[in-house]
Structure formats: structure tokens, C-alpha cells
Length: 241
Length: 119
Image 1 (cartoon, each protein chain N blue to C red):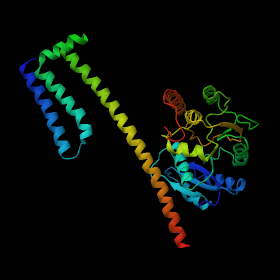
Image 2 (cartoon, rainbow over the protein chains, first blue to last red):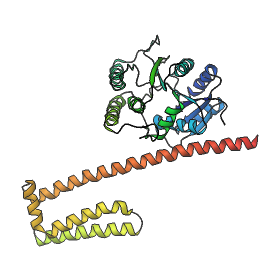
Image 3 (cartoon, rainbow over the protein chains, first blue to last red):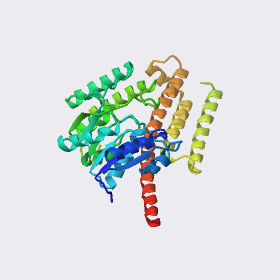
Image 4 (cartoon, chains in turn red, orange):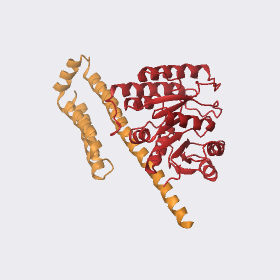
């Protein structure tokens, strides 16, 4: 049985340089939460360091991608009856000091899913121009679908309640990117989505899925996913899609 | 079509069909994938034996030579079979994801249980 009602899930792949720092940051800022790291078949000491830092570790025996790793975390949360799930990246980009704010928004803001936006508040995040164009495009597209303003659809810093976790654990969740398409799916399933400001640091690892040619692949993939999401029968909470 | 060409094509398609049946027999190829290759062998066999059909199809699609028809359908078939395998691959990938996720969850449960026993 879980000791806490909040589970923090951290998908990680080759994050030995940052994982201990991220876990400690979470523990300092939200001491009453359990932390689980989903090690996506890292080639380095990510799993070992995560255990030493006090997190539980779920190890994929093959690399599936950050989306699939996140979904493993959802499944874990569901099986251990957690009420709230916080997800953040293991590379240190998402500042754990913002977790409490996101949880407050979820608990007081009558919504089911809170997306941490780097562009709200005074986070001071300034992406490269090419990424900025892409991010703005997908934010505008997501805003159009949701019929509400979304400023950061590519943010993986999120807080979800149990109903959303239950829904996302059951669907054909994308293995890699989990952005506009997942938000759209959650919206069509009837979940209420809000954004809240978070502190986000620049990705200096060079491992970003949106770096170089990856950005073009990302654009095509997410655009296609959004398009087929619009064409498919609307998902229901009970049976997923 | 020259007799030599006809014999060569019939032998080739018969060889393909025999190879497929043998692969299924030895459980190297699943029945669910065998049908698409059997169909290929059968189409080649029919076109080799029944020249008039090949000529009719050539006229019908507006090709110049029967050889063009063969090449056209050959390339078209390869595209189709690639698409078919992409679909199958997607299904297998989904299943593999679920298995790996489940394995990770079960492994953690086992480790947790053994830790508790040790304590």
C-alpha cells in the first residue's frame, strides 16, 4: 500500500548526471510524495543512482521511448491507488520547486489535468527561434482544438488526477512524444485542462527529441497524431480508445 | 510468349509455391503470412499459363508491353506487402510495449516483496 496519495513519476534514459539531483529536488519540495523512476533501459547508472537517492525504480528491459516510460508510471500509480500523479523529466529541465504550485492548481482549480507552462509567469525561458516557431504553432493548434488558450503544449511537466491517469494508462499511448495529441485526447474524453506557470531550465544535455532533424520528425508525427485524433471516434473515459 | 519463357515462369512460380508450403510445414512461416506469398505465386502462374489474360490486362491498364504489366504489378505488390508488414509491425510493437511495461511492473513487485522478506 502506498504511504502517500501523491506519486511523482520520472521517466529517465541515460540521466546519471542529473537523476539524483532531480529526485532530491522532488523530496525537498514535496516530502509527502512517493517517487518512482522509470528507467527506460539506460546504458549508464541511472537506475542505481535513482535507488540510492531513495526512489523506487521500474526498469524497462528494452528502450521504448519517454511516452511509453511515462505510461508505465501511470500503470504503477493505478495499481498502487495513488490519487494524484506528478510527471517531470529526469534531465533536470523541470524545476521541482514548481510541483506544489501545480498540485495547488489541480486541487483548487476544479480541473483534471494541469500542464506546467514555461511561458506563463516570469520563468524567463527563451527557446531557440526554430523551436519557438514550432512550439507556437502547436500551442496555437492545441488552443484551437481545446477552444481555450494553451501556451505550452510540448511541456511534459504535468499533474494529473486519478481519472486522467486511468484513461491514459489504458489508451494506445504514444511511445515517444506525448504532447498536443495526448492533450487533445484528454480534452475529447471530457477532462478539464488548465495551465499553470512553472520554472523550466534550458535543455543543455543535447538529447532533446526536438533537436536537429528530430524537430521535423516531431512536427510530422504530432501533426498526423492530432489529425487522426480529430478523425477518430471521440474517446470515452470508460473504455479508452 | 516463347515456350522457353513460359516454362521458366511456370517453374519459378511453382518453385515459389513449393518453398512457401515447405516453410509453413517446417513452421518457419506462419499460415497467416503464407497466404499473401501463395497469392503472388498463383498470380504469376496464371499469367504465365494464360497469355491472353496478360494481354487483356495490359490493354486494360493502357500499358505498351506485357512486360510492363508484370513490372507494374510487381512493384505495386511490393508496396502493398510493405504496407501490410508495417501494419503487422505496429501491432507487434504495441504488444511488445505492453509486455515490457508489464515486466517492469512485475519485477518491481518481486523486488519489493523480497526486500520486505529480508527485513
